[in-house]
Image (cartoon, rainbow, N blue to C red; front, side, top):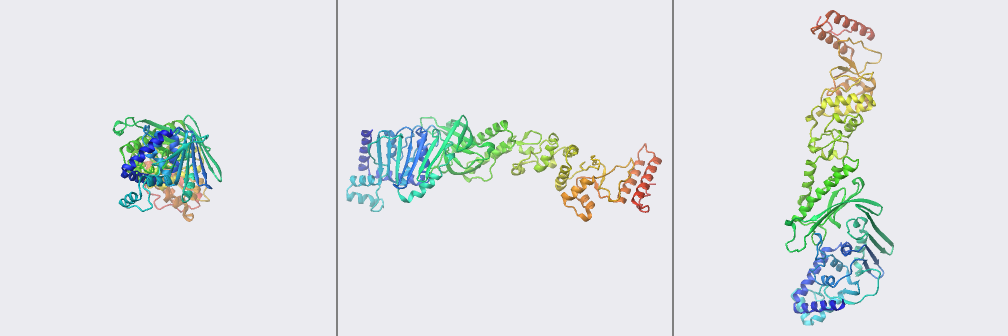
Length: 603
């Protein structure tokens, strides 16, 4: 190994000596990469360890000596691996199983370090600022160095040799870890290192292929993150996630023309029970800075910019985002079939805030298309429908329908759930629902077997919506009998009047006193004019009249007149029954002279 490393160094020095522009180019490229990856150094080191098949990683921060050590049990560095560090644009990841693997993240640690030592296999390899300076001084004399710096407008103190260009190496002492990378950091980066260590959280283990154990050692103690996986179930830090995935070869039009190996894509979802937890950002193994507001943790092998934080606008990313929506839809379908949450499919596609990058790539267009076209909206009749086939009158109305067991009477009525409020703009209008009046009357009949408060609630809902104007059979009398919509219904009799004699040919009934009082309380009726106020509030949905003796007597007289007009009418019997009822009612009222002025009309 050492002989091969010596040969690499010899070639590098000769190239730099013969082509100083190559040396400066490597230096500039390294500076560029270092700046782009800043803030993700530890995550990139974890990614490298996972790529090498390590099942465990230990990160140790030694503040006293200013050293951050990252150890793993993956494949040791090879000569090719060290060569990839020495050449700014060369990656060891020549076999790109999945798109998204670029292999340049190791360089990110240069931003922190004045010295880095890699103990791997049988060798210990060191890169440092002092080695870079000695290399520059040994390659060029004072005059040549001054010329190089002046030509490129660099300061006299500048060293235009890449930090990782030329290593020094020796035999390695034994260790329990396959590879240990020791970063001797500059003190001004300590706070940033601590912050990154804090950001290494349990979710970081979700999408790693090999690592299941991360140990973080600091002066304050040891933190351990462990992943246990059985099939598609992953447990991390006391939380359980169900993993769903879609993997396969990229279609031919998205393959890189210069790659011999077929590239593949990978999409994964981590689902918490009932989709109650998610992540604020999209993952490409680790979190990026692409905000995504969905109730799950999402990983994809997306094309990222060189900072590994943002998606780029590429045809491959557009393809992957469309496939991602398909995966979410298929996953939610299977969850619906397995569980009892009827809203699981809608919630799986639910987002509140859109990300401009994802919007530009067409992600939300695919979601909205799925929401509109798929039969994913649950209804009270037990079926699922498209949004355009659903109508909604509020959760309470739907709950009353379910309570009464009348779901079948309301096909298309949305099942209770907060998700309705996010999609009402896609729903149909209730005015366009055929048979709605008959369904309400059926519901009203079913409510006879339930507490009166549910009827009060139903009446309150219907009377408050202008779109629901109609003639419904909603009221009940004191015998808990339904008052038909064709019947002239009156508010209850006033105090002191026990009953009102109604002839058999007259279609009149009186609202239950209990129902009346509950409606007064629910609707906040004017206590001084309760009967009239209730009549005014309910007239849009019932044939209700305010009880006044003269009004009831007129109804009796009108009823007698109408009855006489029937072909088989017995006028004498009708008049006799009417007069008998009027006399009895006037007697009960104690107002024998209160006959309305129109009482004799028609006779």
